[in-house]
Structures are given as structure tokens and as C-alpha cells.
Image (cartoon, rainbow, N blue to C red; front, side, top):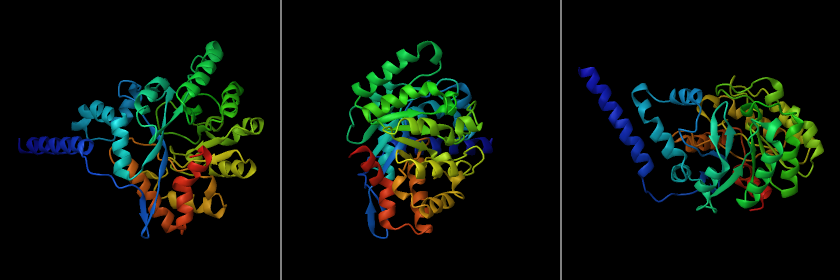
Length: 339
């Protein structure tokens, strides 16, 4: 009986702490302070959505992150965290003023956050949240032209910043020529394309090289030189916690001026041993000006902040200068997107 009361008390304390996290109203202080200097940060990789729109296997994996007694809170916890209010709370808590927010169409792996839903979440905060819109490909052989037209219309109608694709989640190869229509639209409208590279631990995502190795994108990169390609996660092999495809990314970014890197999830706790290695390789190859910071948040309360803090610590550990940190954490985004 006593043990049960203790467990119940712990659950109540954690629940109230979580609720309090989303209801705090402290005045935010923006920027990452390093050696007495404040560095402005833009996180280009955040997600919106709802619990109900996730697939059941992904809900199960997501729920592994919390103690069993708290699983009943997942729906409301995630719902709060992925709304505009929740995202802004995470940003304020991390000291980040601006962020990219993604739409997602992955009905067979993680779920959907439609273009329409994304716009409704960010439309009242255009100075802080920048929309990256996406496209359904699950009936690609039947309605490709219709979906391409909708994508182009949405990019214009919603004043988008870019396009978000995730071949491994959409279960389509990186060298699938049917995606060329997307890259043509992106180049013509000057909308950079963020493409997930590297593996994912999420259920039913493809992990074979044609789905995750960015070298399979090379023909499209050459074919559309006006299109800016952002290689999401920098080829990070999240499933094996390794920099498996980073060499492929570096080869492409050195070879083509329209290629950039993004390091989302490399600041997660499980990647903390490979993060300094990643940052050292980027510095050694003189590619700091081609990396655009992103976290792959908000995920759970505190993640966006902890991801940034690990990056700050690791950059200092491998001797990044303040100027180099400013480039990676914000100025590269500003340059690419014309802010």
C-alpha cells in the first residue's frame, strides 16, 4: 500500500511539473551566451501535429519515453507540445526566437501533419515560425500531377519558406525520378528543399542505402542547379547512432554549390558521443558556412533547449570560434533564406 502511494505521488508531481512547464510565463531571454557574448539562434527543424494523427506504432514508440504510469498523459502532453503555443514555449525556454516548422505526410510510418494544419498553427506568428510544406506521395502513380499542383499552390498561398521531404518515411528511394517534379517547382519558386537523409529509429521507415544515403540524390542535384538541397540530419545513422552517411554528405556539399547540411538530432542525448566528432569533421573540411542548425524538436518538454545546449558545449569543446558558432546557429539560415 505504501509503495502504491509513493508511485501515485510521483505521478502527480511529474504531471503537475509538466503542466507547469507549459503554463510558465517568465519573460524569455533570447540567444545562447558563450564567453560573455550572446549568439542569436534559428532552429530550422521543428514539427507540429496532433496525437490522433500519429500512427499506432509511432505512438507506441513515442510512449516509451515516459514512465508507464504517465502514458495516459501522452495525448494531452503531445497535443500541448506540438501546437503553436507549445512550440513557442519550447523556443522561449531554449532562448530561440525563430524556427522552421514542418508539415509531414508519412501515413505508413509516423503519421501526418498536413499543410493546412501547419498553416493554421503558424499563421499568427510569421515573425517567429517559418513554414516548410510537404506533399503526399502514397498514391503517387495515380494522382502525382494533382499533388504537384496542390504543392505549388500551397507554397504560394501560404507564403512558404521551403519544402520538407522524407523519402525513408515516405518509403520511396532517393533516386526516384518521380520526385523531379518537386525539385523543378522548388527551383522555379526559389524554395529550398529539406530532405531527410540517414536512418530513423521510427517503425517501418526504410533503412537501406537507396532510401537514406544522399549519394542517391546526386543526379537530381546536378539536374536542378537552381534548387537548394538541404541534407537533413547530415546523413546521421540514428538507428545505429553513427555518422554512417556523413562522408556522402560532405562529398556532395563540396561538389555542388546548391547543397547544404542540417544536423537535426545530433544534439540528442543518445548522440552526445558522436556530436563532437561531427562538428570536428565539419570544421576540418571548412564547411561551417554550409551547415544550418536544426534540432528535430520539439519532441518532449526541454528537448529543444537541451539539443541547443549540447551543440553549444560541443562547439566550444572542439574550438569553434564565436563567429563560426554564429554562422552555424543562425547566420547561415539568414543568408540562405534572405532574412
